[in-house]
Image 1 (cartoon, rainbow, N blue to C red):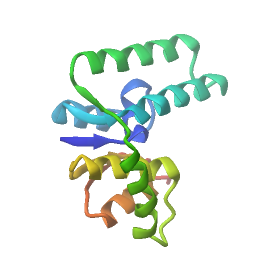
Image 2: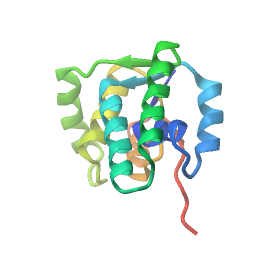
Image 3: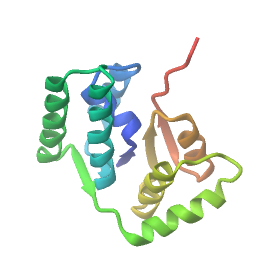
Amino acid sequence: MVYVDTSALIKRYITESNSDEFDTFFMANTPLAISRLTLVEIRCTLARRRRNGEIGALLEEQAMEEVRIDIQDGVLEVHPVADDQVTQALHLISRVAPMPLRTLDALHLAIASNLRIPDFATADRQQSDAAQALGLNVSTFIHLKS
C-alpha cells in the first residue's frame, strides 16, 4: 500500500502538471491510503482554487464527488489522525533537520510511518526529501520548472 499526500492526490481530481503520470500511478497502486487530514486539505485546495478563479464552482463540486466515490469504491482507504501521530510529527521535524518541513507535511509523514506504510507519494519537493531521509520509498509527481 502507498500513502498519498494531498499534493499528489489532487492531481486525480483537477488537471495540473503531472496529472496523467499520477493517474497511471493511481490505477496501478490502488487501494491507496490517505487520512482524514487529506480530505480537509483537498476541500481547502479546491475552495482556494475556486476563489482564485483557477477552477469553477461546478468543477469544485464534481471533484469532491469524485473523492467521495473513490472512498466509497474502496480505492482510497481513509485513516484517522491520532494524538500519537501528532506527537510523532513533532519529533519528525527534529529528525529531518535542517530540512524545512511544514506542519501538515510532517503530520502526513507521521501518519504513514505510524501505519507502517513504507511507500509514500507526493508532489512536494521538501516533503519528498524529508520522506527519503526517513527511509520511505518515495514516488514524486513534482513539476520541474524549465
